[in-house]
Length: 524
Image (cartoon, rainbow, N blue to C red; front, side, top):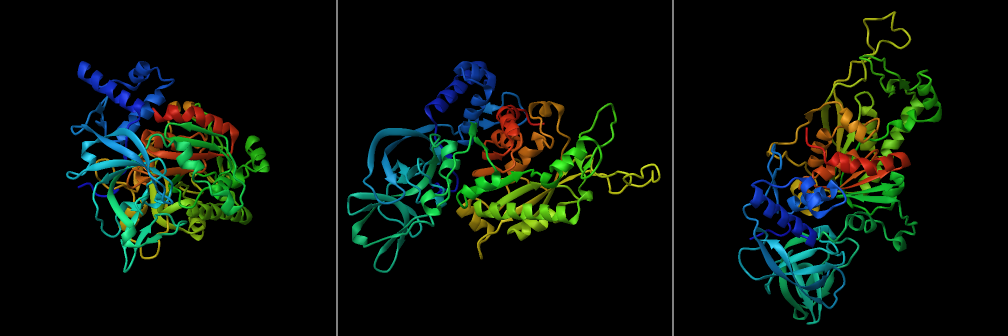
């Protein structure tokens, strides 16, 4: 039998079914699968990224498989047979309402259904079961039965007229119908008033619940409850990502608690170096926080911040900035949600202390093994006098701090995985553990041409990080300092949903162009 909600499946929209049928027919005719460009051309999509979006959804839904290290690497799984399941109507995941009848069916992979018993489907209305990852617009697969055990999710018929979707608990002289939403109260009724019409065996995430609605509009706090001003931020939807032009701290203040599953970001250590006086020093090459590396190999190097030059006041500003980031991150993260944050060796102790003081739990580091331009300098203004001395070792790695939103007292990782889908890190596709040392390289000139951000990280590295950040391969990744969108591009390439926030209008406009291009790059 399929265990309840151990994995989230997806159903096909009409367009996805058409794409899948085209891949089937083309593969049968030619002996190999069509390319993304051929899919785009056949359906006259506006861009290749649209084809990529549909193919990613089909892969995530179990309708396609990817064969590693092969071109045209889409194959149909052996158990790809689909079964039509009757969609009987709409059920409330909120207050009981009269069921709304519908006359349609949905296609579900046979492997996703129980091996025995009658099944049917219901569309969900409301958000009382969100902590069980059942959201408004989803479809639940129901086994038709009249009995249930404590803790099972049931279709409850109350007084023969009103239906609702709740968790079932039989108590001494009553039945408790428990919502999975901390803002809602349970329903207590006499057993004689309740008829069980089935138990939930699976949930199908609907493609019609578009990213902007499910990932942002519904995650904003209720204006009536908080008396906060709700803002409609300029945004752009690209594949599985939603980009917002906003101040990230303000956006995080308006996001619902526990609405994000992981954070992957390269924050602006420009808390100090982008002050007006420091920018002037950088432009005339007069030092300050900025260091202008020497030219070699015929290339002029970009200025880099010299964190060894920070005074106590500036270090205090950085500490306060990252403590504030940790506090806001902890509020919006699911318990057990991980944070991957880029850093550098010299300033990492200060940043890590701020993040811990802000409430996040330190879980180690992963080292991006790459030769940087940091360190190795001779003493400033005494380079000729001390030619055989360097102030700091030359950087050959980039540390990424790994933190976690704290688990509730007494909760184990396995409990967090079951309840929130968080708590651990996803293993590599080959089944090996995620490792804390990742060989990497400097970002290629090709990627820099697509996304000209000064701290752009290579897709080959970021895809490993975003893949690991969601242990069950589902949830929402947030990059509060999006820049040109490389984290979102990596998430799109991995078939994961993400949100990016960028306050700089130039970088926001750049990200809108760069995300679809970066996401289509081949793994290197």
